[in-house]
Image (tube, rainbow, N blue to C red; front, side, top):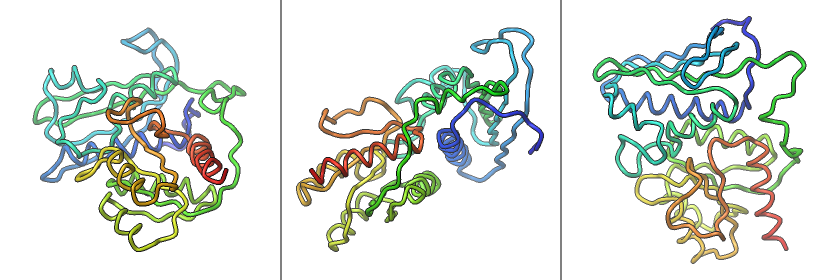
Length: 264
């Protein structure tokens, strides 16, 4: 990885989460094993190209030697809720969200893939101008210290670890579990928990179903649903949601809001 690259317009937490999810997608595309390559390089576009305007970019590439995609799959790959995985599989952060993040930052996501030839996903991020403020962080509230115990539920270990690290840095004690079933077992053991933070798309039981079950047992326990999609079927306005990929400041604000309301 080159060490002399310019800075990009991006939020580190969001970019890490997007990269983790692309890595998980690549892993799932290679059920029989294969090679995963992550590369970063600078590129200068002399002319507008596709959804990219001329200018300087950092190009983050995630390449796998997996099953690849045909033209029809590529055409729909960045649409919300599109997945080639079974129900309950995946990270809850489809290519649509990574595409949306790149577009929000003034960049783009491109896909190069053929059946049996693997897939290359490229995230194009504009190079930050010297002295400019990162727009991704311009409106972030100040991140304050937190306290209490968080029960964190996510079936993807890499994504769970990333979220747990954010929460730990904020001052919370984190109990990590990989399934709704394990979360319910921990709660049945009378584990002291101040808030539940759960992913939505998980095998066996979704995050919304988990929260509904927990509310019958611990009606006063605050719960935060994390999803890769802004709209989740079966949830009402009373359910607090956080959309992936999120910044640490957004996670901090959502958790603090729920804890404050529970203390009122």
